[in-house]
Length: 171
Image (cartoon, rainbow, N blue to C red):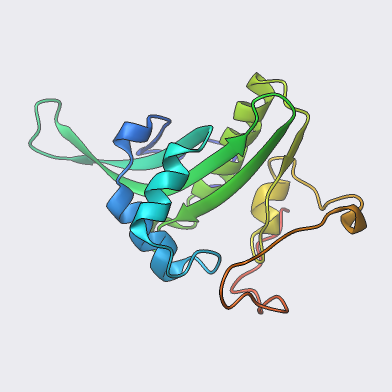
């Protein structure tokens, strides 16, 4: 198990949107991500295209290609930002077969580095079950939640948070 502070061996992070396997990302989000169940593929494609930053984590595996490797995407995250004052980390997903290797923590660290490189002072995210993953990168609960408001027009919006699948807390 990787504690999230080191780059997991055999994996690499890429920020090129053209490298993303959008069919795979769509499948993950629309069938397994509680916040995006049923999200249409065209919406995933538009969300990626409209994002300020994207990251894919790829598992390098031996193959018969010219460079001797083939990469399979195993994780995804994106950032929506104005590039100056605010950023939102969203759609963070790690393939279940690759969980437990620190990939979620790596994506959280990537987001902090992306934000810091642009001197952005505020970033947010929402999670029901991975607070510990994001805490390791420096995210904290909103200091004054009563200041925040939202419009949420998603069908079937839950009126209460579901029971977390797993809660991972930082040591």
